[in-house]
Length: 105
Image (tube, rainbow, N blue to C red; front, side, top):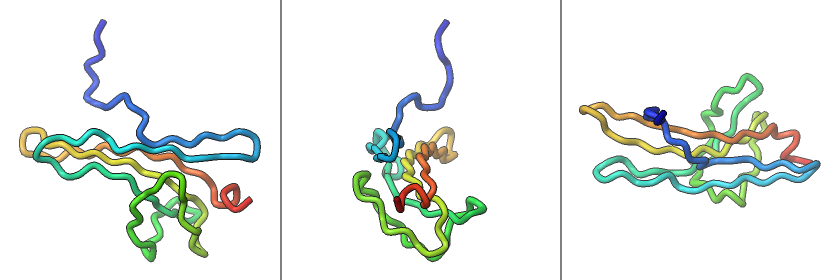
């Protein structure tokens, strides 16, 4: 039986936890010809898991998370890839998220 799922099966964004230690890993998704650029970025979310609008779009260096904003409750590494199918843009995202409380330890 073959897998006919259109969704990518690669891990682009990941969080690795071991006791009190953690690290994010991320890699750029493959770039499709004539499609928007694939990218990694950091996002900070509030306690209701809403994107904090005051943050700047931060190009991610997976080993260098940004300093958390005062309202931030979660830190996410997000990998995105876009393709066009029949004139429609499809975007895939993978997210690895860590509570800021854990990040600040």
